Image 1 (cartoon, one colour):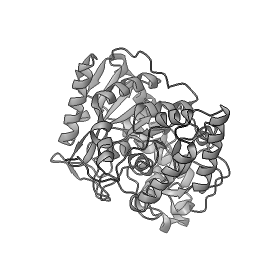
Image 2: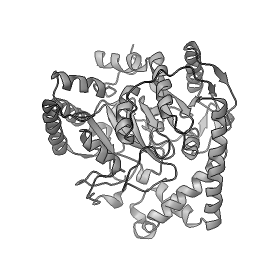
Image 3: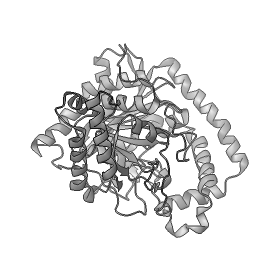
Image 4: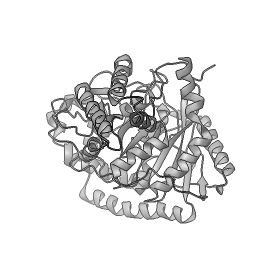
Length: 461
């Protein structure tokens, strides 16, 4: 019996396999683009991942990529279908940023990472749904139909890059551009069974892009496997992440319940299993007590201060068009004092230094990505493993610390429980993105999630 019989869960052909097929002539970029657009037409009325479909642009880019392959001038992502989170600008298309206020916000130029993807030959199939201004860990907003999880359409895909994660999990595209300011790549990756990577802070600049969570936010990839994420990250960062180094053994500290917080038993078990697999691979693995407390002293004030600076003017003029959570952010921001913001900035440096000390002892950390699997849309759990949790951060307490620390972090799918995917998080020291990708790929191969839980659904679907 399949873990999930729903045919909405499917992996598109990988970017790496498509590039090989384009090179050999077995498949053309135009065929790949048509297949991606057909999959969107078949599924997105149900899933609601796409805010804007860029079909004409996609076909023009696919034709250009086909000509590039014929001429021997193809870019590193030439012909590969990609979705773009709707906080990034694509020239000539509206960027809503998940807000009803911005439904007429026509972009006049690409933002930085989009410009690099375009130059690399990627094919843009459309823009994916997001929480309003990225201000929620789920993807509900006031634009229209809610985005649904392909594993269970009554469940949230997480957020804020929820549409991006769905576009990969449902097989629209092999690669999606997301952004992670407090977990917004890793949370939806965890809840939809895909790989999500938050780079070291500053690695992937988005020149001229959206201002939100700017002290913590990074552009990054969502994909079905680490190899595709390497291709994507190499373009975003303009640095080669494609070649796996020899790697070597890594000192790993693991904790199934950081800060003693409640974690769903299936997720705790998944972290323990992942630690055992890493041990089997020869890595020195040590169970530790992990203290991540204090990140919110920096995160909250600095995020709210920027919200007020960038969008405080919306509070009175567009109150009726804003989501409750954005209204809540702006109301809270209005009451911030300069002294609070100054203290938060000082605390930021101290927190980064404290987390950096962990990586003097360990090369990597292993912990849960989220404290709970996907839950019903609009119904955040108030209790996890029999313990009360806060509504705001209760299901998602383990991602924001590494945004505040600025370190790279990856979410890897590792199993399924009650028909929903489970995920573990790997974290490395600042600037150790390549080493983290190496370890993530080793663990991915040991877990074999795609073969066990995705591909066999496609064969039986």
